Length: 556
Image 1 (cartoon, rainbow, N blue to C red):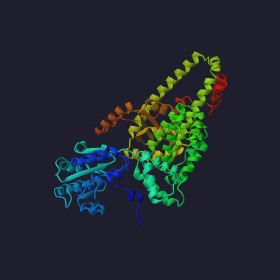
Image 2: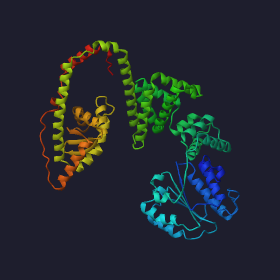
Image 3: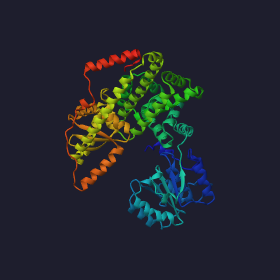
Image 4: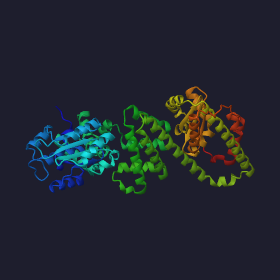
C-alpha cells in the first residue's frame, strides 16, 4: 500500500527534525543531564514538528540502549513503538476526547506502572479543545504526577489553555520553518524518490507552505500525482490554486489604470477556474510590499524580470497609493476567513483601490490648475452663509425625524421580526455592483440593525460620521431597501452613545410593562427636509459650478 510522503519522511530522530534547533538542543541537554520534566507544552503553527518531536521524545526516554539521544531501534520498547504497539506511549486526540469523563479515566490509569519501559508517556494533541471541567480534572495530576509519568501537550492555540495548566508545563514555542530549510528537505526527498522537478518549483512550494514542513511535503506528493512529467512552477500554481507574479502584475495594472471591468474579468476567471482567491490576495499583498521595497531600494532584488514588474507598477502609482492598497487588502484578507464569498470581498477591495487612484488623479488635476482656481474662486460670503443656514435647518428637521422614527420603531418593536429581517438584510449586497446604490449599501452593511417595528428600522453606528452620512442619505437608502425587498421601510440611524440610554430606557419600560412609545405620523416628507430640486435647478447649479471652476472639475 502506498504511503504518503509526509508519513514516510516523518522525523524518526532528533537529527531528522528540520528548523527547530533551539528546542532540540534544550531537550537533548535535558535527556543527557537526566533532567526530564514531568510535563511539556509544545505550541506553534501546524506542520512544524510538535507531534513528531513528542513521539521521538517518548521513544528516547523509554529506549533501553540509548546512543547519546538516538534510539537503538532494537530493544523491546523501540520495536513496539515502531510497530505502534507500545502500551506505554498513549496518544490522545483532545478534539474527539475532550470531556471530563475521558480525562478522569486517564487520571485513574496514571498510577499504573509502565509495562516494560521507564515512563508512561501521554501525548495529548490539540489540548486546547479540552473542556473547562476536563482541564480541572487534569490539573491535579499535572500538579503532583507519579514519577513514571510524562505528559506532552501539543496545541496550535496556547491562549486557550488555562494559566494553571501553563504554569505547570515546560513550554516550547515552535517557530515557522524557514524557506531555505524547507527547500533543503524537499530536495532531499526528491533525490530519494527520484522526482523530476525544477529548482524554481521547489522554491515556490517552500514559499507557499508558509513555514509548514508537512504542508510542503503534502503539496509535493500531490504534484507527483498531478503530472508524470517534470514538475514546473506552472504545475505548482495549478495544484495550489495560485497565480504567477506576471498574472498578479496584470491584475494590479488593470486596477491602477482604472479598468474595473477588466480587473473583474480576471477575478471572475480565477474564481471559475477554482483558484484559491484568499491565497491570491496574500500574493497580491506580497507583490505590493515588494513594490514598496523597490521604491526605496531597487537593488534589493536580483531577478531582473521581477524588477521590471515592480518598476512598471511604480510608474502607475505613488507610495501612498500602495500603502493604502495594502491596508485595504489586509482588511479583505482578515474578512475572507469568515465568509464563503471571497470573490465578492476581493471585488469590493478592487473598487476601493480604484477609488484611491481616482482621488489621486483629481488631486493632481487640481494641483495643476491652482492658478486658474486662484483667479476664479471668489465666491460671495453671503452665498456661503445661506448654505450654512440651510444645512442647519436640515439638521434640525433630521433630529425631529429621528425622534419620531425611534418612537415609531419601539412602539411596535418585535424581536422575532428583527431576528428574521437581520438574516435577510444580506440580500442588500445584490446592489453592491450597482454604481447608483453601492455607496449607500456599504453604509447599511457597516451599521448594526438593533430594532425593527413593523416597517421602521433603527441602525446603530460606532462612528458618529457614519450615522450622519446614513441620515443624510435616507432617500437613497429607502430606495435601495424597496428595490431589494419590495417594501417601503423607514430606517433611521443613531450613534452608539445615543443608543445605550435608549436601550436602557426601553428595557426598563418593558419590564414594568409601561409602553410610553406612541406611533406618530412624520411631519415632513423626506423630499421637503432635504429640499430636493427639480432637474432645471440642478442644471443651473451645475452650470454655475462649471463657470467658477471651468475644466478643473473631473467627472468620473
